[in-house]
Length: 215
Length: 215
Image (cartoon, rainbow over all chains, first blue to last red; front, side):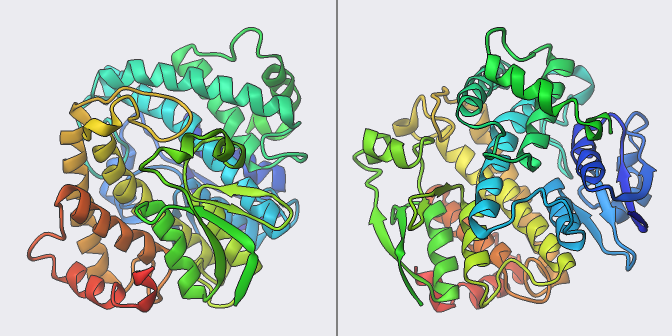
């Protein structure tokens, strides 16, 4: 479905942008993609700050100019406006369980990877938290981050030993966040799925092969 | 509406439990409340770990035994199962904007207060992050946390100068999270609404006076 009245401001290298791109591909929604160049710090330009005052990508801009920031908010809009191929659950119980599992993947996995990188990389000095305000890096968070990611992988292995997908019997947004987290940790920190985590490996090989994950 | 088939495991002193209690009171849903004594560390008991493996409160348990953890997941269930008095928005756009603002209140406000306390209080040594795993406190996070809370208050003042409620023209879950954050910061860290933040003060006096906030 072509939805050229929707504009997605995003960056090809941004894992948060990738979460939205995969979600769109799964639902077969095509939007106008507007690249924001993080390399030249375009997200801090005055023009972009008017679109997203937090100066982060992605942002979804609707036809009437409404700008939606924050990945779960963007995905909520897309699910409500394009209910085909539901990815946030169907019944009230299912919606709640998908919300729970997606949040755990994000807070325990994705956010741990992000925190580790932001407190580690010299180019992010003074930018330890994304958003409007500047915070100094805290080196102790790098070591703690590595531990958190190890714990995330251990917990994910237990979960995927119980259920074929993160939120249960069906593919959902929780799988998208989890795969993006694994790829992010692997690429940016060289922390891949640990050897021997066979349930996670089996799940990853099945899910990451979906064509949407090329997005 | 009495919904005695729903059980809410919670603690009177837990700000996350309070978010759910206020939401229930706004929607006039009455559930069975089951106290979990955090003072005696009952959340770490084997009995409670079976209900919530993350060992945190609150947890909502449905009639069929399904256990829902994580506040936004619990609130999503309640909104879907009891759509009267919507607090998560109505149209797709509105749902997305409420999600965005509630998330900002939580990540920039509530989580900053929580992180500051967990890295500061002697009784939480080795428990710097809630959940299954033990992490040591990092004292630098206390000072950074105070700065984050100051930034949260500054941003909230700007927002409430633009709109009567956090998410726009109507009371929503974003106001619940914001008021609980203000009360939490005030009580636990003595960081009240700064003098001169008149838009925030005006909003707080109006919203916190709702009878639901006694919950």
